[in-house]
Length: 316
Picture 1: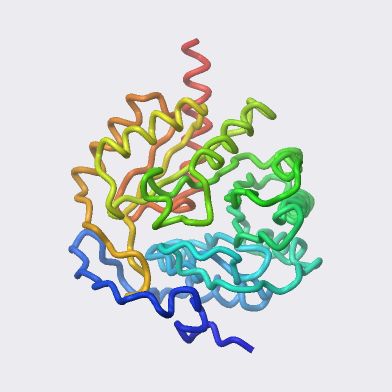
Picture 2: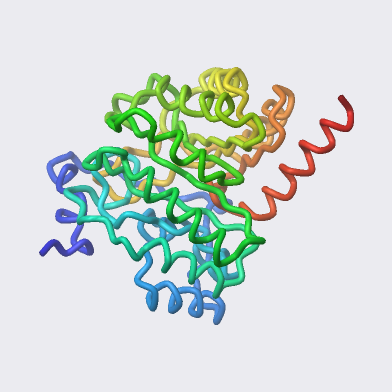
């Protein structure tokens, strides 16, 4: 049995990589350790229902703030990923079989937490014929049954090795927001996201709008991996060409010395510049700050995203 608290067992594919120095974080990137009663209540509920979250598995810096408010991003289909991206802290290896009761447990937790907006993500499951698409659809339907007023956002893998129709299966379950992250600029894919393909991921997001033009689409990238400003602006243009509504941009933080190094810490002023540029390119919603993550403030951002579309339609 693997012990995922041991780095070499959590990331066997990274065990022989040379250590990369971890630079000291600037003041604007530091957060306090979680201690609130709300944080503990959310943690206990997730433990009770045997649920994984990307908040913990990926080491999100915002976990204290989000869990204190009862917000958590559920990570379905286990806690072991079939990919070995160099930026990611989720464990890598051979996953266990799917749990048929997991969609119901997720729906129960959403109802218990009283979530107005829930984000569902997953590990990559290249071992499954459909990449886990049907499991996503079952989870969406279970939440709709238990909490019909809740809006649902999915953050899916790329289904790169899945049989045809996987993407359609998730879209047909009608989540309110379909998120799939590009993660970085295309030139860094071989070193940052070697198991993925930039234009395949971009095509997924474009295809969602072809299948359902009313569905909100969302994607995000990290900065501080070695990209330059022009590369980020080109990704924005690529996203807009695919009619993506919402872009998130956040600072990459190195989980361990074995992970991809931090090239630099991007300043808050630079993030503000990216936000201005993204709105200028036509995105309905932009979140660009050092601590931005895909599901950070997702509920509030969804309300603003919906209002932005209504305002745009009113001007048309």
